[in-house]
Image (tube, rainbow, N blue to C red):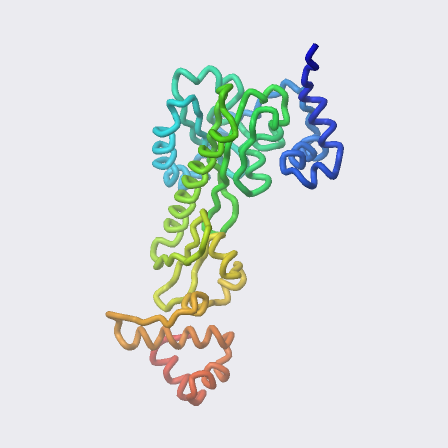
Length: 319
């Protein structure tokens, strides 16, 4: 007689072993759900649901995200919607802001709570694609019995986080299915589609945040996430995506103090079609940035006297 698999007991056993949690992201999530959030896998709980007023406020806070992501969600749903998949766009708290699903599948997805206005953070429903991707800040695939709650083991999900213009996780995009034939290969293909969509949304949010700046693509190998720099007219970096920050060793403090894009990219930047004063102003600002604002040191780097440098700064309105 076959032994019946007890999902709740399995979750409890695995999560109790610290070594399993250390080696497996899913086990680590199960452990968080038990110890941090106080959940039990056998609970018959559904996702928290916002009131209409709370949902309107959440959408208002994320209006730029929704506007930027809407086209990507529509394109992605046009590809996978007929295969019994549901798409969700959430904010950083796992609140489902936008949803796409075929009418014929609505009953199944509404039954598990994959609906606008629900909350899919780990604290709400345990290990799941959205909540775990947001908690781990990375793309994940959660197959059926990898979910924490036994009631969600009919779901398979793949989710990718979306970062804002400062590199912080601001949202997530998810594809979920209730199909019994969803396997690892299928979900792997869907995972790539989700990650690609997240990358395009992230790049759009970055360009939107720095609409007046020049956007540079940082050459990197094997990076799915967009590695972009926002640069002002004098070649100083105004912002960088998470991928660019990782590759170039940038953080908020370094960007705030001023760093030249040409220094980061090891390029000799030429200026075409500018007035000579603009080119000279940019050069002075770059040297001053390298010197940490020390005029004497900047003058030494330029091979001119401090008085001459002060005159040039005054002439070119360089502070």
